[in-house]
Length: 405
Image (cartoon, rainbow, N blue to C red; front, top):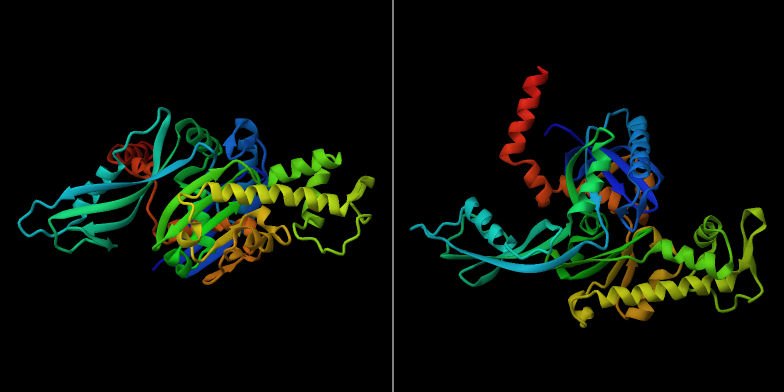
């Protein structure tokens, strides 16, 4: 199999990360370049200033190009924000042929039936991901093509997004000369990078704690079961520190990263002071107390977003915390105390990934790497990609090539 170059852009609230990779197989991925720059023009995953967002994305892409020596012409782009919503819906069709043999066209028909749901004005379906199929009432079928039956059902996880939010994001990327290959919901991507097959099969809750949002994905029986976005994350922790201790936001951010601990030692003295440059200092206990209060609230919000109160049965493998805010010391221990289920910190799994990959071995880059893995592993393309690959779009692309010839 020939190598293929793919690129992905993680457009976050605090950072923009672009990755360029050379792919030969699912377990043979060479990272050629990574470009990371501070994010501007975005708030809680939504573009609020087009010019600033374009400049940040362009700077990230240029850095990845400089390191890899490869021009980025197209990329897979992550989507998040409170405008995201999801539900599970069922579709059913009959197999009318005499041989009762399920064909690929039948899968398309049943998925179309499952996608046929009322959508709020201003929103469109982003993903419609098959969870499992059923043939004549027998559930748990993962690949029905070639099997026999008279009735085909599909359980589908449907994710909708704001049209304007998605359009503005795509416009920022295209304006710098990079085509959007596909738009992928960020928690789906992060799950590809940090979860094991056993966790996805048995049941697990993944919480990607970024700068502006905490993206939640529940996996069960090997597929996505529930997704949700909470507009609370690392930014709110820093804001609390800034207000509570009377510090500039940038100094509060540095103190959080350098000294933050949600489970400080009991013997820590109240009078211990911590500080950074410019003479700013604060009580270590007060700093940790503020951080802990916000993280306790966030963990409680995660539980409130669960589709059932019996989350222990829903996710026997517990919770996997990833994203930059999950790097806070003691967070996994605090999570276990509060939730009373297993909690671990999720770092991107590195098996089969090599090259310039050291920087990606951190929870804050779970989504970045996951966006590339989503495509490599042949996951279901979004509605954006299906529309992009439609017959009319293909005709337009061919026409443009002829005109340039």
